[in-house]
Image (cartoon, rainbow, N blue to C red; front, side, top):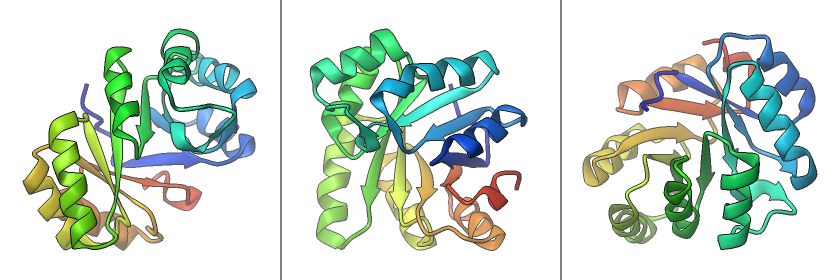
Length: 181
C-alpha cells in the first residue's frame, strides 16, 4: 500500500486536475471541491488510472461526521483521505481507505499532544506542516513510527529534496511546477 511517489500533486482547480489526468503521476490529492462534484472527479481520476486522496476538511458541503464518512466510503470511494481530525482517520480505516493525518507544527505542546493522538489512532501516514522544517520531520517520524509526508510552504526543488533527505516519504504541494520533480 505504500506511496512510492516523491511529489504528491495537490489540486485546487479543475484545470490542473484535467492536466494531471494526462500525466504518469499515480496519486492526486483533491484539496478543494464541492460535494456535488466529488463523485464525478474521483471516478474520472480512477478511470484514468489514478489513486485519489481527498482532503476531507476542505470539501465544501461535506460534514466530517460518521454519516459524511459513510458517504465517502460507500458512494464516492476515494483511495484515501487527509484530515486533521482523528475521528476521520478512524472512519477511513473502517472503509479501507488510506488514512493521512495532518499535523501542524505550531509549538512543542501542540506537537506532543498530536503525537500522543497519532500513536493511538495509527494513521497510515502523517502529513507534517509546514514541510520545510527538516529537523521536525525526522523527530516526528522517529516518535510516531509511521511514514511522514511533508506539506505546506514547499516552494522549490531544494525544499523537496531537503524534506525527503530528512525522512519524509513524499512531499505534497499545490505548486504545479514541482509536480514532475
